[in-house]
Image (cartoon, rainbow, N blue to C red; front, side, top):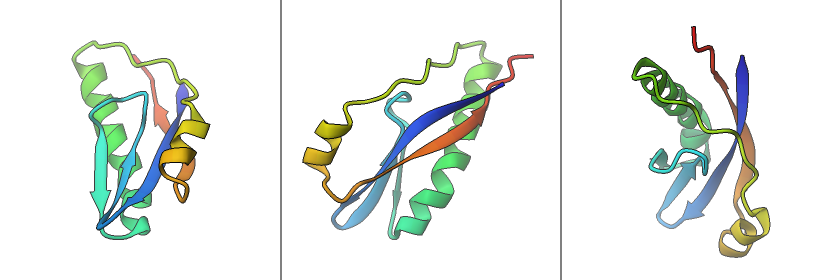
Length: 88
């Protein structure tokens, strides 16, 4: 089963920062947009794999307050990241 989570990429000078609100603490910094766009799905997949290995439940995907994010980071890119949530 695949789950899709919202990912946020924001320019927080002097870095680009990406995070997935449903996974507090999973944050990826980068020097360029391409850094976070490429690396965040990999980091999240590893985090999810570790959670499943420990038997922890994955969070249910939610929709964060996108207007609040836009107010704080007007240039933010908001996208999606898919993870394999097979718990077999």
